[in-house]
Amino acid sequence: MVRVKSGIQTKRRHKKVLKMAKGYWMTRHKQFGKAKEAVLHAGEYAFAGRKQRKREFRKLWIIRINAAVRSFGLTYSQFIQKLITKKVSLDRKILSKLALEYPKVFEKVVEKISHKI
Image 1 (spheres, rainbow, N blue to C red):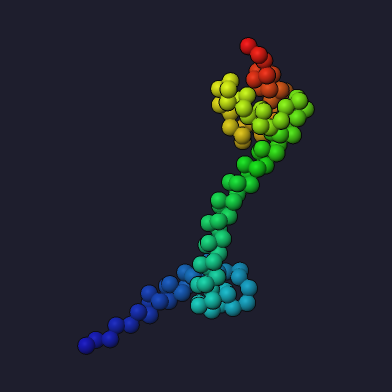
Image 2: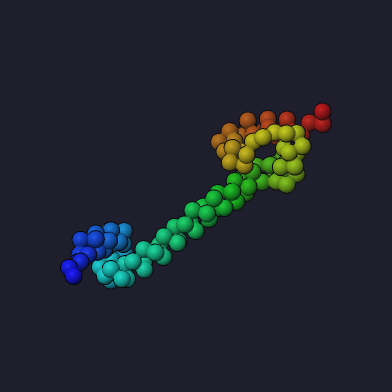
């Protein structure tokens, strides 16, 4: 029977992993075994990080909205409740941006939902 060598495929796979491990410390960017493990862990951390980034931004937006709304004598939860009851469909990202960059527009939004019409 003919012997099959997989040298080309192995070399390609090793090169691919070592390329992904570029910049890692010590043997983690030189030795395939250690590089492979490091790349796998890095992938897990990157996946988790993408989820955490969304959480962190939402927290930031809520903090900014709360700070802006306090000057109008409201709390964040009261503000959001009034938005829901008045059916104003602005998400937290947009409200945060308005509060930070366009305070006059944000003030009009607060006035609109505060009126007892």
